[in-house]
Length: 427
Length: 126
Image 1: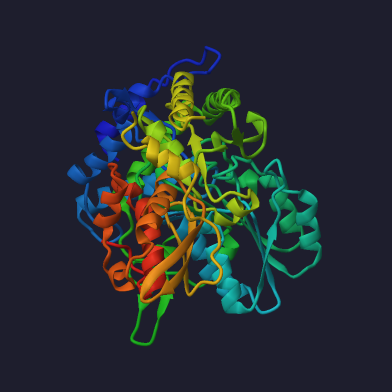
Image 2: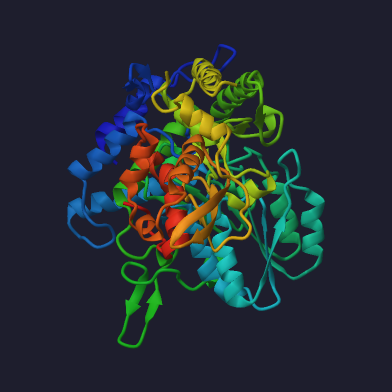
């Protein structure tokens, strides 16, 4: 990593906790927040979709490309060694951030690719006809479709844990599923991208392991917002993505169980993932390189390493405290809007900083369009969770989600746009 | 007055014309808006090569519902051959409001489903 980016990290001053909203005082670190739209300051409430980037990450990416760019794992020259060191330092930082081992921390393109890696490399060798894969109704399409494809191909069954009216799973249903003893793998999200529900991941992975099954946790909405120690979570596979965690797009992370990773065949094959290639075949490189075919996203890894360091310096406990307070404020204010219904657990402490909602008489697209008039960015749609939308008996919802840079005043601005929007619709 | 959510748009949204089921019908089709998962279907009765009557069914945002409602009034009596040739501009002109690039599909979903029913063309109108 570059000297200037490192200096920038060392000089980070995340600000002191203090007022009731545990303000993290980081807004000046995010240059995009100075933008205005039609005279309205940007109010970015779509961090569940992708997070904004702090200057240190932007600088680290640019500095790597400007001063340290070379391919990794090939060159003997000094510049290539710098690139190697930067790439592996990023991996070490990222692994340390989530309590994982660098050797079993694999860089992928995103969570979707990480889950596909497991569904192909582990799934195609371990799931057979008559076996079952269990997922939940609250999954993102990324944690549904790879399992549907696997089960179709292998003649296995795909079963779903149900989501109750408060947006939570029933732990006894997991127990009942595991008792059927055909379950090979259980895949579930750490934090729901629609409901905000924080699942009791450690309890679930312990039960799954005790039943002899393998667990995969989608941590896309958890790692950027909660203290996550993957060793404590105890999943065999834990996937998350860089761009939701203040890092660049194009880089995801898969932490895997070393024993399983060793036994698995590679997923993508080609350059860099081999030990040697002959005319008749090849042998595989050691972990984690066996699962990183081709030139990896080097600058993106460096950027994500800096993002992880930035979050670590802030302290994930403080991040959570800040976002939980914002979520409580968000839920309180949303409750003031007539005809507005929020999906998911009722209390902020039970959820991540995500609130999906509907307003009677207004389609979510129109809600988002009208929020945009006040410079407020919220999402509308099915949030890549169409099966869950069916459970909620809606086609779409509007969704506001918070990040470290949001303030209570921004949530108040959202409220103003929602109330003004209702007036436009004559409600 | 709001540029996008004009009175007539909201009127068509809240009281969509020609919505429901049409029995008997000769043609039908159903489409999804991939942006939001909204569904829209149409049933069409044909007489002498023209749309004698039609009904849309489904749910969606104000733009998609109003577009379908407004289009339905124009489509009645139109020759099938003419319907197959209708392009995006026909719908957008009829709608008469500035539709952003991301909402374009909301406005054009009804035309897509009608053209699908009439000519089997599943492409987005251009």
